[in-house]
Image (tube, rainbow, N blue to C red; front, side, top):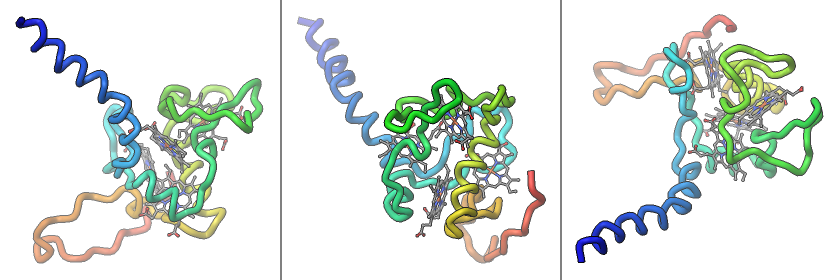
Length: 146
Ligand code: HEC
Ligand code: HEC
Ligand code: HEC
Ligand code: HEC
């Protein structure tokens, strides 16, 4: 008798896992920065699906790429992996460091297309103060290049 009550939540949990995984990037609002040991900045704003819709990016592997022998594999993609699975905190060979990989990818495209944020504080946004009078509107200062 008792076993049934243990099994049901287990079945429900594993049954729902694929749905949770599929929804994860729909709900993504920020790029997770917890792989950086002591993040210096607030996480970068990135509403995954909405971003990719409005910027008209069609291929997942524009960002989730795969290389073999130093060459981009056109029709393969790595969206089942984190950037940090391949990009370490330090660069390795042709592989830029994780921070540089993000900046080259995100800022690189924005610069190239002349659209999308390129200023530090436009991506690394502090959560807005709830009381506008306390925080007021402040203009992001241009930061030095990393
Ligand atoms: C187009 C968006 C974008 C812009 C512009 C940008 N960054 Fe980032 N940056 C990211 C993303 C994405 C990451 C990876 C993880 C995260 O922080 O969310 C990152 C990571 C970092 C990290 C490593 C994590 C940490 O917080 O220690 C630092 C430091 C950093 N950025 C500093 C800067 C500075 C300084 C500038 C301006 C010169 C800048 N970034 C501009 C998107 C951006
Ligand atoms: C503009 C760049 C970009 C494009 C295009 C893109 N993604 Fe992503 N995606 C990201 C970044 C950045 C992350 C976070 C990776 C990390 O934290 O290492 C991510 C994470 C994910 C995740 C993991 C979700 C999570 O919450 O960790 C999935 C699944 C995913 N993307 C699927 C896709 C699919 C499917 C497509 C194509 C329809 C796509 N992505 C296109 C940048 C992109
Ligand atoms: C499966 C491993 C793998 C994953 C996952 C991966 N990369 Fe890479 N990436 C590489 C390799 C290998 C290179 C070096 C390519 C070369 O030999 O020039 C590279 C190069 C880069 C470069 C510089 C060359 C270029 O294509 O612009 C950027 C930027 C970059 N990666 C960003 C990212 C971002 C952002 C993510 C996550 C959305 C990511 N990478 C996920 C393996 C990976
Ligand atoms: C292949 C090109 C490309 C890449 C890669 C890319 N972007 Fe963008 N992004 C754009 C374009 C184009 C726009 C402007 C869309 C518009 O407003 O019409 C944009 C707009 C944005 C905006 C403002 C709109 C919004 O969603 O609020 C943010 C924030 C942003 N990008 C963050 C990022 C981050 C973080 C990354 C890296 C993880 C990234 N982008 C990678 C092309 C790109």
